[in-house]
Amino acid sequence: MSYPRPAGIIAQQNREIAGGGKDSAPLTRPPFLPDLCGISALAALVLMGELLALVLVLAVDGLRAFSWERLGLLSLVVQWVILPSAALLCRLRPRLSALPHKLAGAFSFAVVLAVLLTVMVAQHCWRALLSQAPFDYWRFLSDCLIGAICAGVVLRYAYVQQQLYNQQQAELGARIDALQARIRPHFLFNSMNSLASLIAVDPDRAERLVEDLSALFRASLAESRLVPLGQELALARRYLEIEGLRLGDRLRTRWEVAAGLEDLQVPSLLLQPLLENAVLHGVARLRQGGEIRIQLVSAQGSLQVSIDNPVPENSEAVRHGGNGLALDNIRQRLAAYYGNRFKFSAAREGGDYRVRLQLPVTAGVPGQRQEKEAVA
Image (tube, rainbow, N blue to C red; front, side, top):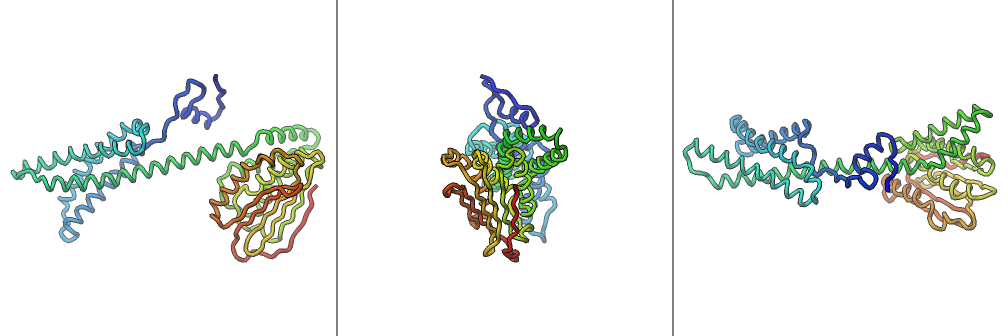
């Protein structure tokens, strides 16, 4: 059985990683270590080697009796360990990615130790030959131990850096998936149908619809961050206007917004997913439609948000948690921003579905005078 492949750059990258259909290759594991063949990685390793040599010379001679000759010789030995080790690990990088992390770490350390022992044996034999002295086994063991400790620290640093990069890439992929899930196809198709019907009869309204869609999708694709509440309210109103073109008089909204809250900082796309749930699982399922009530006030140093919408008597979506994905997504985002300093609840109460949200705000929030407006 074969599956259709989506077009686009992101889809092409996904096919390169995961493939498609029954003949696709197995998923490629993320790299275990950075690409040590790159110029930036090599420059960082060389710099770290020079700093290590400098520290060792200062530890032995001190600053008063600092020896440039010792620094040069020690730098030569360190670089002879670093560069061959980097070359070997670069060639072994694909194979290391296929191994469990503990085994890959042990194998990488063994490779570096093999290079280290080779260099140390060559250096001490050369020194014994030039000085006509016997081989100093204790100094050899001491140098090997110091080198092994430093190699372990550097490998650990490289591993942590690569895992951080892998995590960032995974979060980017998850964000792309979340964006694709957030932009619901039926909402886009319904909006396009509304746009097509408005172009001939009401061009000005069609133009406003295009602007509203552009603003909504631009906010969906923007980086998640804190934005002014006024901007979030404007985006929520645009979304309801788009849905109002499809539902007509069935969709009614009532806003109760306390004056002076526009400058408060809230996470982006906080209200729109909640209102989308209210439309999809509430008003749109009622033949007579219904009213969505949105209230925002400040009380006791917190921003309190309430969204109420009617739901059908036998609503399968509410009973089986059909809107739980969006609510869980919002709850996780709020936890990332506020820790445990927020309150969030959503439940059916009688014939309504009610969402309550309480967020901490900074001091000096304006008072409680409410500005009410009704939007048909």
